[in-house]
Length: 165
Image 1 (cartoon, rainbow, N blue to C red):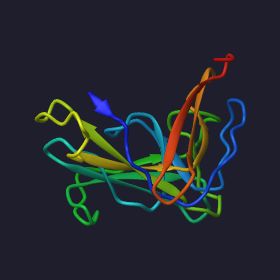
Image 2: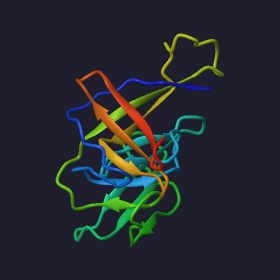
Image 3: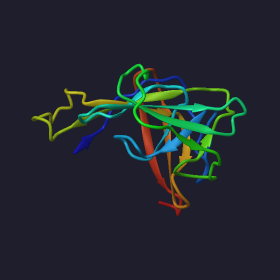
């Protein structure tokens, strides 16, 4: 069972009903320990904490029209594993949507604590962390989430049902 997390970051973004609203570059993906989330561009992160550990980095082309997703076996993202995936068109919302043209690169580091590895009922044993871009992001036509910080050490991710819940 995953427990809640710790955050670090810089600013707060506004929530807009079911639309993506952020000043940061991002790529929406679910190929990681956290599930569908907006991930930062040009950041090497641990996308799979369970052995064998894997790392991922997303990069944009110079025109800002394509994202390349590459997997690595090391935390510096220097030893590539397998081929890269190229994404050329961004859906308006959810999985594989992206923005390479925004000016910011703000994100929070979200820590994950798992109770099935030992007895960690008090969330003392950090198992992995993943970056999550600050802002409001639509997951699909009926749900969205907002990732925000109120200080350098406190933040939250709120999930919204766009049908009024």
